[in-house]
Length: 78
Length: 377
Image 1 (spheres, each protein chain N blue to C red):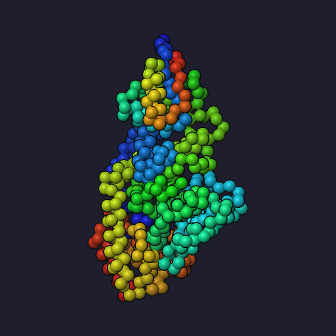
Image 2 (image 1 turned 60 degrees about the vertical axis):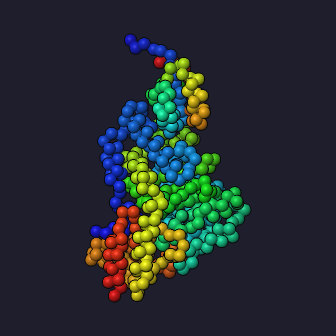
């Protein structure tokens, strides 16, 4: 059976916002990657950024510093 | 064949545009619909194109670049999304039907009242009228950057300042200038810039969009699939999703993105200089021919368009003869610019429009001048 683990999920208001974050993170070697938004967070669709829980502060500071928007940050078991 | 109908669409595109469209059609999924590599590659291409458009036009936020299928759609979204009952709108005689018809419809519905900046018999807008037509309830000035019929340009930086000094919005139709003339939304006080991708930008047909200044609110013209917040009953409010219901033309946008790379490599100034040289060469050639009437004001800023008639000959027949006998493609008739033709006095005759692009040559221009001279004999 698949082992669940704690994960940081960053959600976005639009695909454009997700793309802006992905571009910035790749250019600045920040951790994580795009995945579909887990159902536990929102029963809809869309893209989210997945990283390790310990990266939360780093990512929040970096994105805020770059003026990039996101909706919410969650640490959930997926 | 000599293609001189570039104001309708640029026929010849850079090879990189075609290559990008083919690559996109073979590899790209639906942008914003899923997180597998094909969908993400499409989303990345679309986002990159937003960034390039924002940079080109001085739009501060790439997420305020909204893609549409052409500038008509962009103008319809803008004009149907900003006005309230009782607003007054100023526009000009130089406009294309893509501006006129949405405004006429709003006027007929009793939502707006409309005033026109008049054009003289040489197609020049009365610049002072932008100021004198202002009313306390003027909500917006909507104008083209250049006439698609005469090539006459409007000093949009000046008009933008008039609009903003009055607290009105400034909406610009850049269909004839995007990619061929530098545009800076900040410097020119533009609130909404509507553009098409398939003319001066040299991208594929089916691409276009609008760039929106931060803080300008446009109600959605269409609502539907957004790829986010699927259980909400209303269209998500953040731009660009607010105005982009449905699958984007990402294949076309991939081509547009490649075209923007090409434009940046060549430089808009270089394109403008070359097109101005070709236009001047043609104008000087045909304006000397007895029996030829050239429309427009060539003493001031101009796009790569020359409209003319030969005596009282039907413009459709002249255009057809140019194609049949000389293999020169031009555009006759009314050019979707009814008020401009009324100002020029060419409602009945129409006019033959020659329009040039970066890819035309002086030799092609000379051949077109010779053809006009022969037809005028």
